[in-house]
Length: 318
Image 1 (cartoon, rainbow, N blue to C red):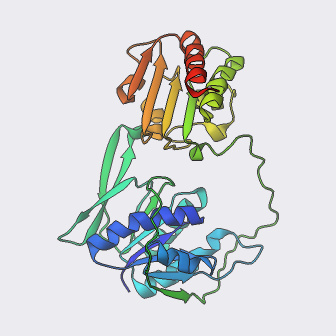
Image 2 (tube, rainbow, N blue to C red):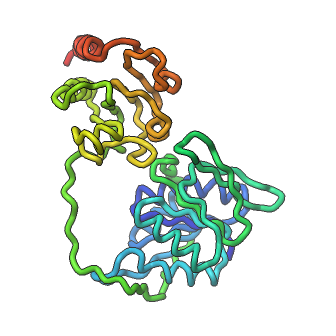
Image 3 (cartoon, rainbow, N blue to C red):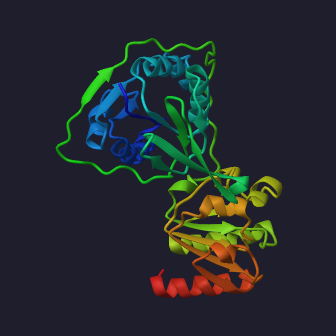
């Protein structure tokens, strides 16, 4: 049965995909179908826009999430969906690749937007290439069209009162040759930077590791979090990799982003381009960051930031 299918590893990812899938389903004049691993969330997903929710069978303790690939592939062969959106987490990307191989269809990884070929009833998928310097447009002519969508690319779907839909439990048994021997949660060194409403980002314009405290003071006044560019995390190790922003790091969508000594290479800008307001502080008036910034201050961050902190404390009565 044709439709737009969405699969997210977590609830919030599924809600984002439901928002993306809603427009696709309307344009292609088809249904919106969501997958869930928990039966209680099925009715919730219907309220957020799904016409049908397919409940996946429970995994055994020693089975990884990728064990769902045979179940998803079997269901897709039987029901022939038009499009399959999968959240681009590390596991989601692996599931999508395996699924595309089993179904002998194409896959658009890192899809950041889409349009429609109304005549052929196909999705035109868009993604950034060459480190974010260009946008590529793809159309997959085999079924289903599969795309992985990075978390936070779309806003979560809004709840719709009075919606009705169907819930169906899948009976196939998940299986995988891979067995989980032990689970050891990774100790996080930082907060989830992607959830921050205000981000103060440290770049190579900062001279010493101890000076990162200046960025923390500014973030504390604003109630924000501190992020960084790739060299700060991977080369200098001043901050943990969990807060590195960029095309191969975290993608953020804060209400306010402040870049301190950030040059603004495209690989970094790709991860922050969705910020509602972007402020840059850099002593180089020709720094690329100013091309992306809504507001820019040309000056030495060691002079500018203390003044910003002082003014903000007065204005916010901190």
